[in-house]
Length: 141
Image 1 (cartoon, rainbow, N blue to C red):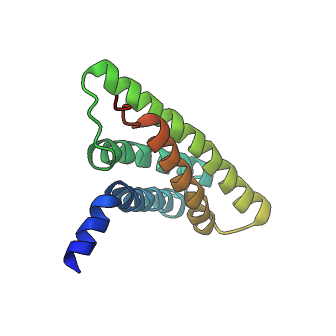
Image 2 (cartoon, helix red, strand yellow; image 1 turned 90 degrees about the vertical axis):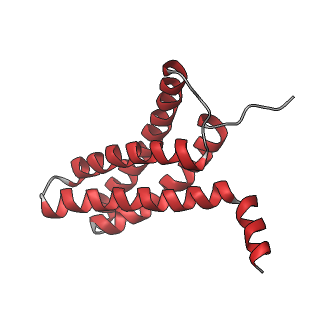
């Protein structure tokens, strides 16, 4: 039984780690949003921007280090990787903001409910973009 679990873990390690750290990133995003919007009474779209910014920084470090185990070294390579990462997150962030606007301002859902719904889109988009573009493994010859 333990050997089967180990085999499954190693087979799906990247996806498991992405889901784990993606979950933590989502928690960072939602907590920052909740504190900014509900505790500090910051306008919900500004609170959402702050939540996005901090969760992107957290996600880059965890994705680079533990999920995709990037081997990029040197300032130029890391800066390019980070630039691609931020670009992908800007795209998913725009989708997040649109979903938040539609859910809160158009449909009338509570902000935290809309935030959770938006994060479903964000997590899926970010994994695909990270896997296929940002942390793509070089082709073996």
